[in-house]
Each structure stands twice: as structure tokens, then as C-alpha cells.
Image 1 (cartoon, helix red, strand yellow):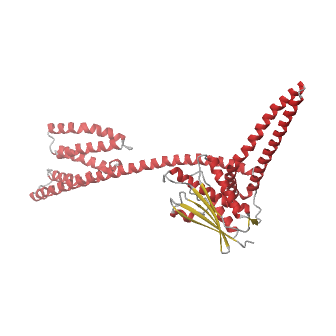
Image 2 (cartoon, rainbow, N blue to C red):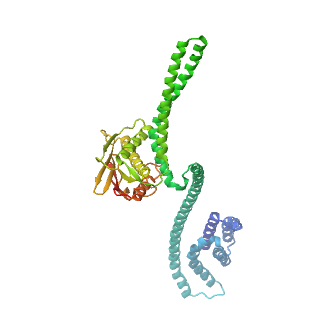
Image 3 (cartoon, rainbow, N blue to C red):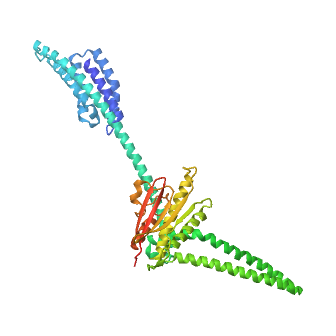
Length: 450
């Protein structure tokens, strides 16, 4: 009876194991399906026929064959613990039935030993089943963890693919922008200086924005007087046809006055353009005596008008404190002008950001420029009451490509190039700042700069 129950249990477990992972033993699954129904029928037949010892040996053979299959076939590797669990019990039962055969002499001592072994076999069976249960739970947990890791790897692979596509698209976009930029740089006369020249052109952009509105005014006058003159010429022709000499004289006088005005405003526009070309001209590197008070004042106004041209709502208080009777200093005026324009533009950006943030209700944007003589040095200060620079970033201010401006609004080269320009002229540049309070850049230039 015990062998029958063990056989049916083993067949059920083996069938369940193959259903979960059939591998190459699909034929065995069909065989187990037949055995699941055949074993109960065989048991009924054996009991009805009363086969006795032969029936017991038959069941022992079935159990041993099932154990052999579990040992031999890798598909049943997960059932090895169950196999080892039932082996002692099956072995004791088999030995007991063998000794009951007529050809063997049965003794009370053997029977006692076998009966004493049964409790240990059952304890072994229970212990192995508990171990198998725990091992299965651990395997399930490990499988779930592995599946989770595989899912994470899949997600990572998907993200990596998406990132590669994004990088490829971005690379293509950057490549296109690079080609466009290279094409634009090829049209410029000073492409040899590359990044430095690009920053100079950025400064030029700030400068032209500041005086572009100055060009528009004379051009408007030229256009308006040209249209008026065209109408007056039509009237002049009509008066000549009618022989009205008085009208002809009056119109000719008006045309002459208008022509003077066109010439005046044309010369004014020409003067502004020449000034722009002067500022945009590549520096020769030659030093010349320069009135730094006038230079500071000029670039303060230009930088301010540059901000106003881009944002009509922007206003700021401009304050100057120039040293009296300051003699001309030997410097490269175009280079120092670019430094001043860069510092002043940054100052106006800082106060504008603070104004837009609205952190101080009574805030008034202000920018100061001052010059002073300090022993054998000229001291130029550009100060603002804007957003300031965090203390953690102070050490990076003069590093190339570092910028505190939002993405797309700064190249990170302005202060680095400005610092190098001042150094090349024998001077030094320093910065002091308090976050939320403002920033002060100091330029120190030697007076004896030969």
C-alpha cells in the first residue's frame, strides 16, 4: 500500500515538474499522463487478484524505476531532494519484503532491526521534505530576483538604445550646427583666432545692439525727405509746365533745404557706421596713450543702450566716479574696451535678472564704474547690485567655458578672455561677490606700461 501511494505521488510530482519545464522530455510527459491513470487501475487489479508477494515486488520495481528516472534525467533535477528523502523508506521496505520471501529465513532479530529503522526513515523523510520546501522557496525567490534583474537589464538596454538614438540625433544636430558655424566663420576675416575671435564678435554684437537705434533715426530722416523730394519734383514739373516761376522758385528752395538735411543725416549715419567699424576692427596689439576715463564712460553708455535695445522695459542707474586729472595710460584701447564691454554687459545682465526675480520690492538696478590711482597702478572697478556669484563658484569665474548665465545665453569665454587680455597688458583682474548682493570686478593696470 505504501509503495502504491509513493508511486502515485512521484508520478504526480514528476508530471508537474515536466509541465513547468518539459525540455527534451515531452514524450515522458505523455507517459506520465498514462501512468497517472494506470497506477490506480493497476492497484485495483493487484488487490482483486490477490497477487501477494509478487504484487509487492511489482510495486517495488515501479518505485525503483521512478527513482532511476529522477536520477538519470536532468529534467527531474529539482526532485533529487525528494528522491533522497524516500530512499531510506523504500530500501527498508524492499529489504523487509525480500526477507519475507520463502527462500529467505526470517528471524525476529532482523524484523526488530527493520522496525527500529522505520522511525529514522520517517524522520529523514520529514527533514528532507522540509529542506526541499525551503530550498524551493529560496529557488523561487532567486528566480524572481533573476527575472527582476533581467527585466531591469532589459529596461536599461531599452534606455541605452533610446539614449544612443538621442545622442545620434543630437550629434547630427550639433554636426549640422557646427557646419553652419564653420561656414559662417569662413566668411569672417579673422577666423584664425577661432574661439577668441568669436568672443570678440559676441562683444561686438553687444556694442552694435547699443547703437543700432542711433542708425535708425538718420535713416528714417533720409527715407522721409527722399519721399518728400519725389513729390516736390512732380509739383515742380507741373509748375514749369504752367509757367509759374514763383512756384518753381519756392519748390526749388524746399528741395535744396531737404537735400541739405538728407546730406546731414547721411553723414551722421556714416559717422555711426565708421565708429562701429573702428570698434569691430581686429586689434593690432599696439599700445597707445588712452584716456581711460573717457573709454570707461563710452562703454558704460554703449553697454546700457545694448540692454535697452534688447529689452525696452530695462532701466538702471548709471554711476561714475572717475579719478581727476587722470593722465593717458599706454594700453591697447580696443582690447581694454572689449574687457570693459564684457564686464559691463555682465553687470547689466545680473541686475536685470535680479529685477525680474522680484526678490526685493524696492530694488533699483544700479551699475557703478570708477577709476582711481593706487601707487603705480590704475584701478578700474565695475560694480553692480545684482544677483552676485555663489561662493562655491568663485574659483571658477575665470575658467574657460564657465558661465553663470542660463544655457544658450553665454559662451563661458568672456571673462576668461578678459582676464588673459588684462594679464597680457601687464595688469591683473580680481573679483569680489556676495550672493544676492552684487559683484565687483577690479582691473589693475600699471601706469608705467611700456
